[in-house]
View 1 (cartoon, rainbow, N blue to C red):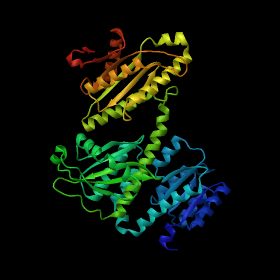
View 2 (view 1 turned 180 degrees about the vertical axis):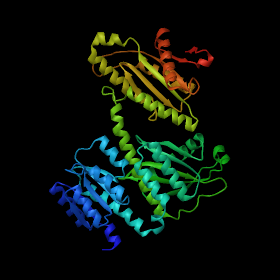
View 3 (view 1 turned 90 degrees about the vertical axis):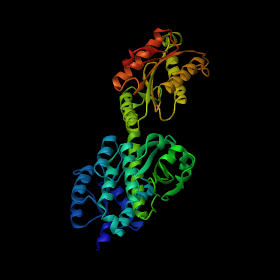
View 4 (view 1 turned 180 degrees about the horizontal axis):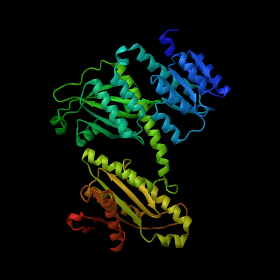
Length: 469
């Protein structure tokens, strides 16, 4: 048996005979060489005699479990890909498997198409590695793919993807985007400032959706002329790299020309496709992990984030503000005399009003902003890239909207409430997280004391901690 053939062999490890034979028959019909093992111990014995390219193993087995088998395989031969299959997934096992080098994590029952697609993608990439000696010997490229596969942080994945593609193409400037709730958000900047990155994003936004459907086809575009920021930075052209998996575009890498130069021609197509696919898969894993993690932070009544998420989100957004030299504002909102609603109509009606308020607030802020039900009738809003003037405008708009809205009209009620709001800004008012929250809270209570249904701001302690309405 030649090395190439050996590397195309697939080992199925499954203690359930039905699934073991089902997977094996399906893959053999697709033309793959397959061997099977009914336990982790038998699998390790087989791996001593032959070099398999891929191991598909069940997670829960007597003796050596799938996770233990993964660790042993990766310690003996990191080049072997491992796909874990389970009927009882949890966040801890998924996180462990991905961090220890698993290629994918599939949930039973697996459709034939899903298994074949996952195996085909894995084996195709292995074939490309076998055929391309230069790629196989490029240690940096492999290290990048390993770093991507083990990273579950959105910003970390975006940074690695932009850096890897920029290095492969031979440029020093780029922008990384992640698609959240149907909108592309700037998540990484390389060699350009936040304002320039935002302008590039804005100018190319119309191209994203059209280009994102063209899998594996980077697109070179000329940037529009007549913009001082682009001319000063000598930005003239861009190449778009969509990060697509399962026919869904999760992100985009935009590479930009260096000053006085054009973007080099894309010669190493296989290398670029390799990085795109690994970047897309890593981004997909990070998004799924983030979605699962965020479920711990969801308020059941309103569907908004709960108070546990406040510190997590604020720390993340402050790091982003520091990195890109931008601002953010925190708004505290509390309904006025809400106890009267509960006393008059009952707690069930009060709860429904809070749920309707949450939906109303979601329509009043951007997708990139963070909306939290802090508890009871108190809400917190993190307005990203928002300074004092804009924060006041947003707060005033929300205050007027609540004042004019007739709550629970469809249920036959005509309830009117008002709200008091307070806000503080980073870094204008303070650079401390605790103090930022305390200042916004203090401003909100100042509005309560001043007569309610208003918005206040506590100015920086350096200015005496004065209040502004």
